[in-house]
Image (tube, rainbow, N blue to C red; front, side, top):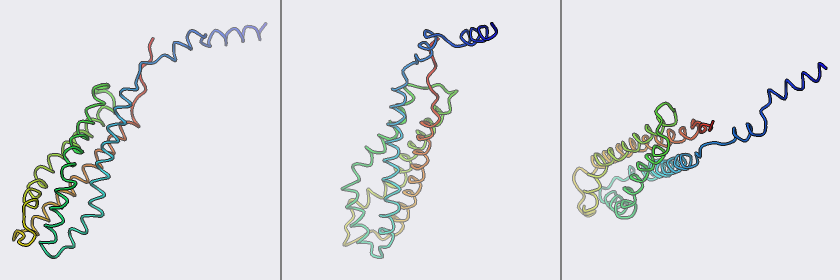
Length: 190
């Protein structure tokens, strides 16, 4: 008799098939998850590009002792990868808005991480416009045979702002990865 009461008590405490099926129903979270992944991918691609050029191309640029060589390289980069930069930077910044379309609950850590990632992606654009674009405008039209007298100052400015945006890109990527890690599971229907 005691074992029967114990079994009935356990069965009563155990949710039945209807309760188990109801607990498995969840609001669809795949759009927010896909948006977070997209945002992290775009930020990661941008970070890889910026940090990669800082680590491998910048030392070459900084080693030039002749202004004409630097103008030639920088001008060539302006005409080849330069047009892709606004697309990449704008895409990463817009990519940070996507998760917020699907999940904008300010009580969630993932939402704040996404917002902060977006702030850093926006800061990349601002620092580029302030520090790199003015130099690019000069180096795209400068004659390597007659480089500007202040070419070393221009190079220093470009590299300083490139360092800043490279650091910002790592911050944006890290925050967007954090938004994936700290994303809360969707609320269950009741």
